[in-house]
Image (cartoon, rainbow, N blue to C red; front, side):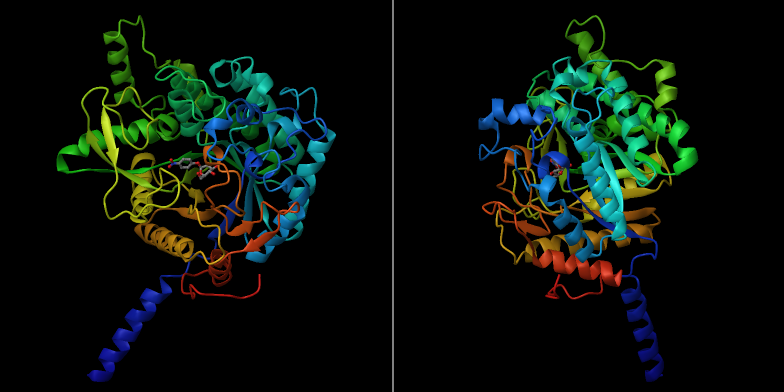
Length: 496
Ligand code: PNW
């Protein structure tokens, strides 16, 4: 019987080991965003974006007083980005287009020849190396000219965005098959208007954030519908948006309900209008904000309503769910107006909660980052439960450190543990089709400047050529991609 036991055990071991392989069509990528890497902020006819002006007006709001003026100089060094993306063996590279580089006035009557050429060359070079371009239309760099007209608070912004989207689809849609309309409306609406700690630095808590959110939903939907009607028939691509989600857990069993409510504030507000069967704002939130507004003596809710026509227009405008995951929080109720804790934006000032973290979640660099890999799997399960069995593409996940060295075993560990959770989620039956590492190269980390590093590749910011050097995590990720499996050594030093 002993041999049988051995056979059974070795079969079980190989079954477990086998489960560390990714499904054959699972894709791996890495991401960047225009303002964080391109530099060349005023080259040729490019106009200023809200980030170009914000870093000038408010250097004190950037940790090291730095700017993205040069950043990784990817405007000039993009061939190196393509080369390292290829060395990593990426299936796709997610980057964003700078609206101000392509359409300097913000409007479609002026298309920059240089801007057009820059993205054409980048896309063609990626395809030549067998890397699929995944393109974000808006990663927070609104033309300043449109901000001067009110930006995301002006109802016309969804038309401005739709016109821009049409230009981009018509220029690059023959080669780009996966599009992200908006990156993280929770950040560019909630963090902006509730804290003013991002461009354009306007404080309008509980008002501006909701107006922005409504217009973001409409902008996304208009772009999706333009693609669907005018471009899908010939190009057959996919269009969605990327939502940043913190996994939320109740502090104890009494806090289950408030936690679910917080999820609706932090996810539902950016997903319910698009992904739910009924569309529109999450009803529970509509009710809370209406009641609070009434108590404040306002004639109507601070949350702008959708007409039924708008609800139907936005509903269903997706081809997958783009999900960015970094960290998690624990939720408990607060007394009214008590500060919300280390995520002071979404829901504030309409959500009376306190957010914290569990003591065992280790902090990474930047104020908001605590490591909880299981949060990724749990959030994926919640998304499936809420919005059905839809395709989910993880459009960002990565690790921040203050140490810029090459021996980044903490980052290797982060990737390994989060990819394990992705595999478990797939086993759970969640349709996760791809994973995107944030980020390919160290870059301008918004209000943290160049202090926190997220790169698989280190950038030498002292070097005018911004030399790119692979970290241990780049070797590890390349090996995962090559083997299509987590059964790889975490200490790999192959040439990249
Ligand atoms: C994302 N949080 O932002 C952005 O898409 C990237 O541009 C950025 O560089 C990256 O993540 C790292 O910060 C986030 O508080 C901002 O949990 C804040 C959070 C998460 C992501």
